[in-house]
Length: 110
Image (cartoon, rainbow, N blue to C red; front, top):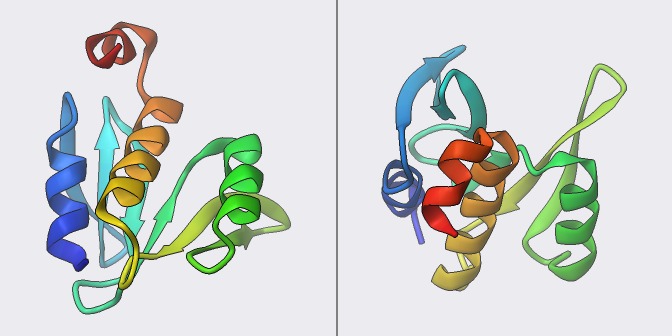
């Protein structure tokens, strides 16, 4: 898997736009960021899964996921997607989108 695969999954979700977040490619839904690639060459993405989702992902897939702390707060799951199963990557990106998307949009996928 590569950054293009993450980009394709993210942009395939409703109302997602890509933008520059401090020089990094990031994705948001209705103004709320849910994913940030560390750079175009990296095999790592930060996913805003919410605290419970971050803890669940890091416990279930420690070989791919780790906690990302910022300013003393648990902010994201850092996911190494180089050797990840495509289905798992899609699930994690979609979960991050669901965590940030309004209910009206979430219903589109349900």
